Amino acid sequence: MKKAMITACILMITAGVTGCGGLIHEGPTNQRIKDTTGLTVAEASPIVAHNFGLIWPEPVTVELSDVTMGSGCRTDPDSLRSEGPPWRPRYELEELDPTPEFIDRALANLEAMTARGFTRTPNRRPDNDPANRHYTDASGYSVASSRLTDVGPTDQVRFVMAASAPCAAQ
Image (cartoon, rainbow, N blue to C red; front, side):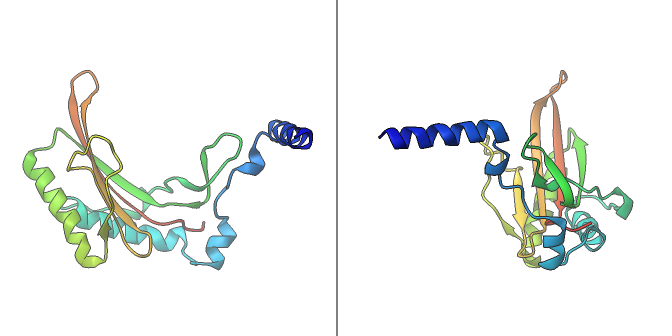
C-alpha cells in the first residue's frame, strides 16, 4: 500500500513538473502527412473550393486564395490550442437572416453530396436544429451547415456553410 502511494505521488509530481505535456497526444506531424496520405494544402484547397461551390445555394466562385489554412492538426500541449503544420484547409460563408427557401436549397445541396460519396454524420449539437448538418467522405473531406439563432443584440439568425479538407501538409 505504501509503495502504491509513493508511486502515485511520484506520478503526480512528474505531471506537475512537466505540465502534463507528455500526457497529451499532439497529432500528426507535417512529415507524417507527407509520408502517409501525401496530401498537401496546394492539392486540397481546390477540392475544398469546388465542394463549397456545390453546397452554397447560390452561384459562387471561391478563389483559391480565399481558402484558409483552417485549424492546425496538432495540439500544443501547453496551450491546448490547435497548431500547424499540417493544416485543415477550409472555406466558409455566412448568410444573415436567410430566407427559408435559401436554407432549403442549402440543405438539398448538402444531401446531394451523398451522390458524391459523402455520408451524413450524427448531429452532436444539443439543440437538434435540422439545419445543423455535417457530411464527410472516405478521404476526410467534409461539408457542413450550421444555424445560430438569437445571436447578438438584434437576435439575428446566422446560417453558416463550410467545406474543409483532412489534414494536409504545408
